[in-house]
Image 1 (cartoon, rainbow, N blue to C red):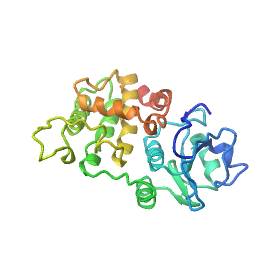
Image 2 (image 1 turned 135 degrees about the horizontal axis):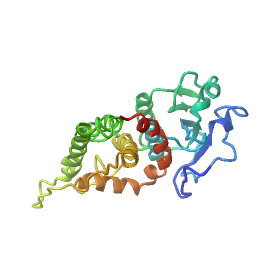
Image 3 (image 1 turned 90 degrees about the vertical axis):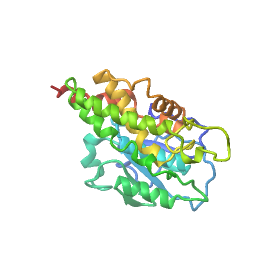
Length: 282
């Protein structure tokens, strides 16, 4: 399958297939089909868990579709460095394909050693607790505000795009959320300030929300920012203002990370997902 495209040097084994390739012939624990993409395994052992992530498929029924929550879990597993498989679910055929695997469930969902996990927040918490040091890194941010700062931005975007072109009020609300995010990204974290140094740090130079490593906060926010960036540009001619330097620095650093850029859906998937919203606008 043409997307996602994964570099062969990554320290994990990853397999990607579409659900329709698995259900008729194989159990969920079986290997993926000829569309499977494999990567080099960092270190394998008999005790490594069997993890299968199911995410929304794109309009062709195979490629990665538009779903920020799916991408978030994709990123979490990638950052954990664990071996896992990813299967795209064609939502148009969902009832038939999922009746035996996860009836009544929408992606994302997870099979962990055969046990079904369906709630996004609970899956994230489960992975953080279960895939823990010393074997796997913790991804929780040190600062609570790293989670909170972008919590409302996607809701403001949704109101903005639904009310376009008569959406000046919603645009200002969205810009206020971007300003809040920008201020946070440009404000030094406590860990950046050396009280024994004479240097007065006034602007943060960190790469991500909580420092120079990607955390769960980034896994939650970045997929939503990517959707906003693509959909708002396409249907509202909206660009994130250049004076939000912290936001632009953040996105630039994020797109340089394969865990984010290689799990993003194609722009066309986002544009198609919001086409009906754009057509219903007043």
